[in-house]
Image 1 (tube, rainbow, N blue to C red):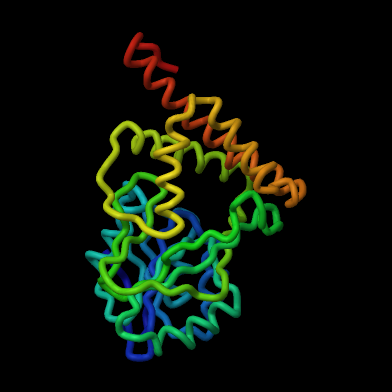
Image 2 (cartoon, one colour):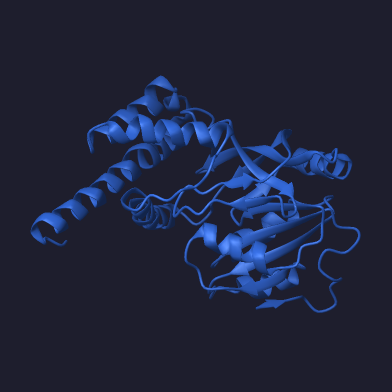
Length: 292
């Protein structure tokens, strides 16, 4: 179900060049920041909500977005539902998370480049900056991370992965934007750990039931190939320690101070160790029927 805000122009009016699709659940703390960061970009926002109770949907309508509701299964299927269901007539489609936002120079670059892109250009990669506790995490291999976030409408689709899903372009050349967007969640450490506990469950499903995802190119494809060909072959539990040491020492994660130390430990060690523990628990259940 999709509802347009009262008095708003029709979705994808002639002035809009890009439709921005955002998946939400209880994102009132972030949503206005995201929408405001698109000042100067002729765009339409579509919010696909999966059960917010904090006023997210009312706020989205006040901000001028079209609001849709759909039960959540995983990010890939939720986003593909939006692509299959919501009429989008702008030349470009963009994926953004609610806790992300554009830097002003990226908004200006998008407004200038998208209307004039050659017909054969199918999508744009954008660099992501991660901020944690107010600190830009510049080291540890976290920057630059290039993600395909803008594509010609109907030329892209999200690969069917439970975790670490990316946009796959059906055709066209890919260019790079010169400016960055920011990923900065304001909900605190408790939310971060709860979210990554759920992510570990989804990644476990990908490990236990791998699916054919097609060809993923660029930096995400390289990272996935290294994960499957190198990291996956290392002994479980030990590989989390090795991955953390690689990011924190060899990739200079320690240069990001105390926020960098905490972020790198949680993301590169705690999360990876948790996935291994859940994997080991699955093996115990199969062999002895033990459940935690």
